[in-house]
Length: 212
Image 1 (cartoon, rainbow, N blue to C red):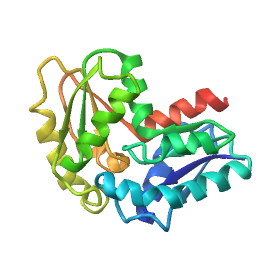
Image 2: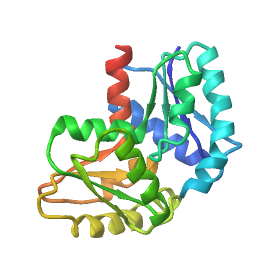
Image 3: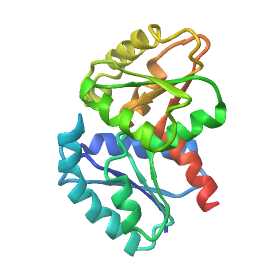
Image 4: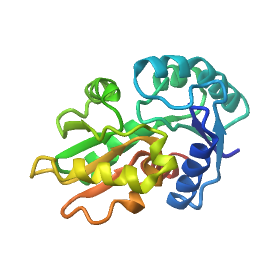
């Protein structure tokens, strides 16, 4: 069985981009992408996240029962991650947590730039609960809708780049805090002194470590 990458929102184009990025990051691992058709079109804060959890858990159960080697929850808010781990019989990775782990392994002060302000408190709570607050001290919003990353990646990338140039001068890693980051990283241009991390790539690489 493959590693199942579940997009908790219902936008199929995002699933396609996410799956392609996972396969580029770990071409030796077999990934399969599933879209939560019962989820909201985008997850932009806690209300959307709450709506996304019930249909997401149905897919997690289906993937686990089918014998998935691992499951990746492809929402940076780590939507339903703990519930999914309690439900599944295989490892479950969230792309938010995967990016925090990758940044800690790289080392140095890290910032997160996410899409909308409503996501910031969710991400702050996750970072604190997962034990990463000591190295991730800055969380900012680029103030772009999630779906803009898919529909107009160059425009979205410009907003992320502008936010990156305003980060504290000691920042060495910047995490683009959205699954749609896979569509914009190629448009970011040069961000001197910064290592850019996206959660899908991080989760795919960690999947390799989990499943060999």
